[in-house]
Image (tube, each protein chain N blue to C red):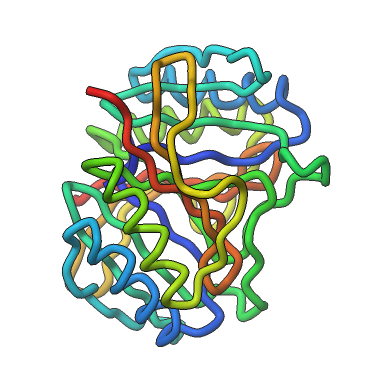
Length: 125
Length: 130
């Protein structure tokens, strides 16, 4: 359903350091910088892009929005969370672990990236 | 790579009517609705192996769209890109950037459309050459 997701950041170098570490933890690769200075990550047929806002105003994160990355295991989710924390991310919500609700059991881990965008990993447990 | 994308909504019924129409163009069906433990209503559109979700913010504060962010929905043809845009505008969306159509890019000609949803989230429809 999704072709790509783009998030805003004012400090592209800080964002690249953070997302490089996060994507490597998910089995992906470092991002590549395109001619417009955007950082692109391509994995499993979808594209994740970090950009400075094109309107020239500061980037701001959403309230109510989250981007959820797929993981293969709880260990991968925890490695992703640790890599993010070690590279400028901030831990939010409960620590990584299993949550039960609405008849579902899920492993979740939450971070904010250096620009404040809310991201998580999610896996059915 | 993406398990899901969640966006905030200030009016779930309005969002539902908008996204039912827009995602209907892509072939998605009615969303599942769920109220979480802290009372926020969420809608989940499951389509093509990923989930698009709409939620009232869990911190009780107003929704704010991000500046710099865009969600790109994959379209099956250039015509579907135009249809996605037109259905969005007819259901409370706002057209932004250049009108729907082809753009020359490093990977060939892509068909793109851009609009914002009723909460101001920036959405893109895209068809890439095979």
